[in-house]
Image (cartoon, rainbow, N blue to C red):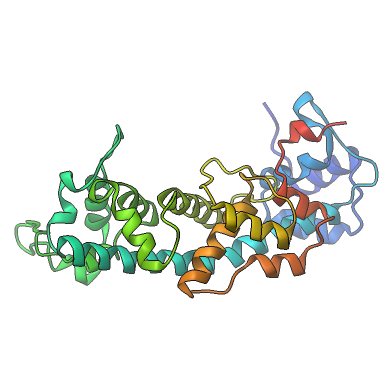
Length: 297
C-alpha cells in the first residue's frame, strides 16, 4: 500500500523522479489545492514507463510544462459548458414541441409503449419519472398531493416535464421515443442531419458529463463518440487539421455544427485553433489521444 504524503513530500518525490520545479512556492500552492492523484493523470504522459513502474520523467520536463496543459484542459472544460448547456436547452425545447404537436402534450410521452427500449436495467419511462419525482420545482410539485402524497402526472404537460429531465434522460427519450422516429423529427426541427442524430446527442451528454465532473479531456479517447457527419468532420479538419474520430475534437466539431445550425452559440473550434498551436503537446493530446502505454520510449 502507498503511504500518504505531505505536500512537501510530494514535491520531493517529483524532484527525485527528475521533474524540474522552477518555482517551489508555486508548486507548493498548486499541490495544496490540487489532488496529487488527479495531477498524476497528466504527469504520466511525461514519464518514461509508469505502467512498468518507471515513474522517472523524461529529461528536461518541467513542472510548468505539465501545469500549462492542466490549466489549458481546465479552460477547455469551462469553455465547453456554455455551448453544451445551450444545446441541452435547445433540445428540451424541440423535444417538447415535437411531442406536443405530433403526439399530444399529456400522458402519451409517459407511457411505456411510446419508447422502444433495449434490455436496460431502467426503462426510458422509469428514467423520465425518476427525474420528475426528484424535482422540487413548483411546476412539478403541484402534481403531487399535499395530504396523501398521491401523484398524478397525467396532466403534466411535456414542456414542463422536460425541464426536470437530466440531459442523459433527454438523450434516451430522443433516441427511443415514438418507435425511434422522435430523433429524426427533433433533428429536422433544429435543422440538423437526421442520420446518427441520437448518437451525436449521446456523445454530447458524454462530453458534458466529463466537463461537469472535471474529468480530463486531454489524451482522452471518447467511449461514447457519436457519428459526426462526414461533411462536418471534413470541414472541421480543414480548419483544425487531422484528428481521431474518438477524440474530443470530433465531438466539438459535432457540437459546433448543431450550435451553428440552430444559432444558439458561436462555434468553439475556431477559437481553439487560434489559442493553440497544432504542434503543441496540448493540441496533439486533443487530436490524437493515446494511452500512457503508447507514450513510452
